[in-house]
Image 1 (cartoon, rainbow, N blue to C red):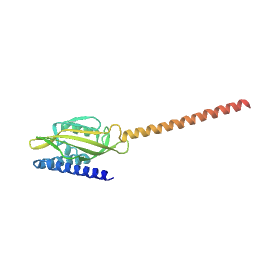
Image 2: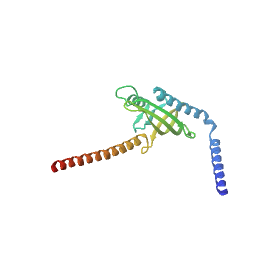
Image 3: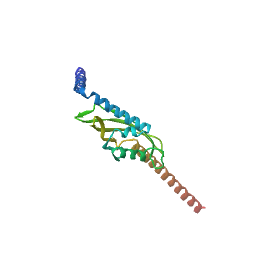
Image 4: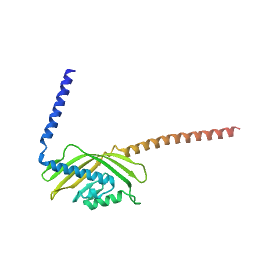
Length: 206
């Protein structure tokens, strides 16, 4: 028991030391850059949630690439605009009536000169025109470059668990229901066949 307590205390000490070392390693000269990146993340969140895509695209570099959850790729600000016009809105050909996202950053952005890389998670809510809202827990990775003193997104990748999400769970549940329905239907059909055979046998005997 004492040995376990000592191991636990050592683990906590190591974790605390690493956390302090990470904070100490942050370059204070990047504080302004970190604040700018957080503003960009907030602008993108608010723009998407309010349906104001211009608040997002103004942070996309002209040569930027965005890979969406449905594996589509948009190039530059205009490509992002076209994607949202096609996917979200009240138009007859759009798929979603609303798209809401709540991103969070994990740890701190890493800087490589005038390039920054950050990653984190999002809680996404999609409201299709033909069904109720469904939610995804997704992940994102963003690469930004400093252009004329301003940070711009040059690459943004969104991803989710392909093998375990709300849609795959719905399909699995549907499979269970169809299987149960098939069993019940088969049992009902077998019962009907037996009933008809008995009636015929009774009629012949009479």
